[in-house]
Image (cartoon, rainbow, N blue to C red):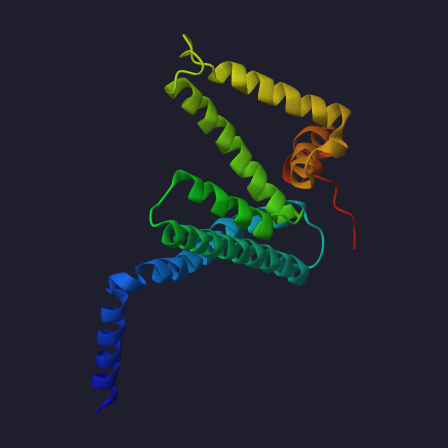
Length: 212
């Protein structure tokens, strides 16, 4: 058998295997791992690139290593979480013979504890990102279920007022309570803009360049 024929045979066998319903749950777990890894890399790489070159000191090699490490960590953690979550969901459904709402909650709790429970910069950013979305979703759900009345006016302006008032109060008064990346952003915007020496660090650079 020639190499092209062998390749076609292998692809045909693999594709037929992937269509088997009895393996669907296990294959979904594997593809979830793949999608978690890819999505984590796509999300983290550009974010790490921008934040590293904006705020991190050091050589180009140091910066590239930091970007690669952050991207790898985000990609790995998301892949591990999706793998754990989908695996535990499938296991619960198999044991109980049906899918229940509690399955997703329990599976995600275990995955969150195992994967995102370590207190580091990457996990902190991901968890806080999710928290803000959860609060929005719970507020919408409370209105949808009738637990709180539908607002007569759009509450978003009040929300924006409280968010920005609170975060700037914290930054000016208790900056150590804010996450390091947010502190860096706030310093760049509100503190560094108070300092300049000439046109170079007023318009061109953020801070005066020191001669080498």
